Image (cartoon, rainbow, N blue to C red; front, side, top):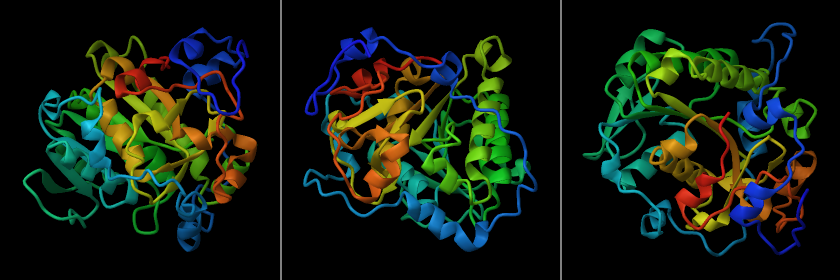
Length: 347
């Protein structure tokens, strides 16, 4: 690995950058995985088991007593001011649990939000910062209006009984949004994906993929976006970019209230647990540092829950704390957002 880390130590930035990595270059830098089609994309029990899929990573509450609302991040060093964003931020999937947290995180930073849902009805409270908007990713005609004039877009939609299958939401829907962002010259697209999406033999992938082949469709969507924004593409020449955020096991807890309590990883070898509120904070803060987060793909989780993919499902269910027991060599830690993002490598 190039360095030793004890069970109660955390990697410094120099250790992360200076470590000796031994990962396949393609997976390490892009997370690509090519999968053969196997039968119909709509023949799984998605509708009956949607709740089961979502609850697999929706584990019971964390035992840490350090929880605060995500607004606590505003007092931390390194958090950018909301006036760095010109124009509204479009959140697609705003009625979903993670998308809803993204809307809240933007509101807390006094950023105007287009809260996009399939019907245009937003379940949150109205305010001067939130504009409910209709956007159904399965109907490309509704997407252009939702992203036109936006300073950034956060894609937090995913398959559901009412919204559509993984093939039409997590794959085709994402690609349609990316194309609309490029056409509208939206500077940055942030995508909420999933950890383990490139590891088809991992327990997490195998279980979640039972539901409409959702993991296969997520990676196909990711890969298509990377192609659209590739170096030398019209999007790249226009200065447009994307960020793929791959959360670990999602909880409904409050934000931990500390950047230093979070960990990023690249290579899809490590995951853990993380509150949806903290996923939202990561997505929003990524918008303020496009020079660091643009054209990157990374995993995120609470630093004290990081574990290899082979065992992370069990450790999440058991609410285990790992304290650095497993080191991938690609960890990013920091006491500020800028420091946290500064160790990321481009796709």
